[in-house]
Amino acid sequence: MKAIRIELYQNLVNYKKPTSFQLKETYPLPPYSTVNGMIHYTCGFEEYNDMKISIQGTYNSKVNDLYTRYEFAGAGYEKQRHNIMLKGKEVNKKTGKEVEKYYGAIRGVSTSELLVDVKLIIHIKPTDEKLIQVIYKAFKSPQEYISLGRREDIVRIDNVKIVDIEEKYLDDTNLKLNYDAYISVNMFGDDEFKSNSTVYKLNRYYDLVEVKKNTFIRKWKKVSVIHAVKEKDFLYADAEFTFDSDSNIPVFFV
Image 1 (tube, one colour):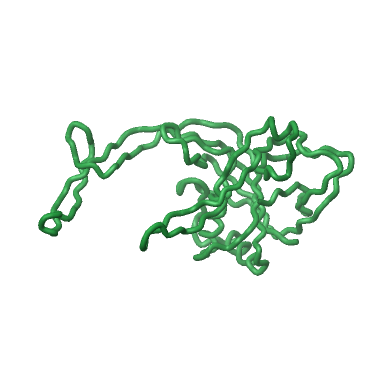
Image 2 (cartoon, one colour; image 1 turned 45 degrees about the vertical axis):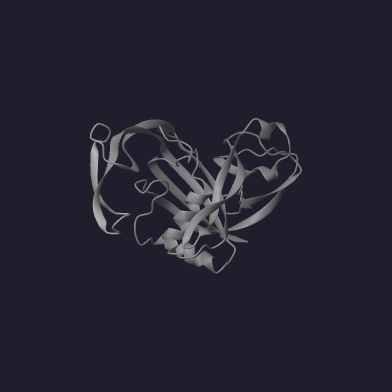
């Protein structure tokens, strides 16, 4: 079977954990929803196209950086509480007319965790094989700069290639990774590797669900994966795995 392999580099990047606020923490690798969004935006897809994705990579270190943080809760402006005044409008309930209203916001400083010198290897296998050429051309000659993570986290594309994915049977050989990787927990039993590894429940894609008339929310499909660390024995003998035949690295589609 065919897939697209994309090799990327990023200097400083944050793949934000949704539950982190005071310190904007980062995942060690981009989550599937972030990569999925990058692919769809780069290709100009206006509807969701189903595809399997394998994410691997490394980074050199972590640093903390300051950023400007805004808090806005829709509350009325209070001089002692807010340092920004925003002019808006609201409908007077008695008269039904629009009147001016001033809202308050707070501008402050917070901290963001950044990965340094990130190198990623992403394999993409769309369900519709006709999209292989579309994705390949979009990343080979992008219409604008590509970002992954925050909008300012610009990507340098080092290589784009269509490769063959083949299955290999490992006989009496432990498998070592050259890169950190996300691997589905379904590939493991209750063995030592699984219990000693970090398990993430990551967003994969979402469906729009109508909660009331003309009001939709995102309902996320999540996947549980292990963050496997490079150069560690993690899968054992007598097992069959998929490999990139061009680079001979294992591929873990989710």
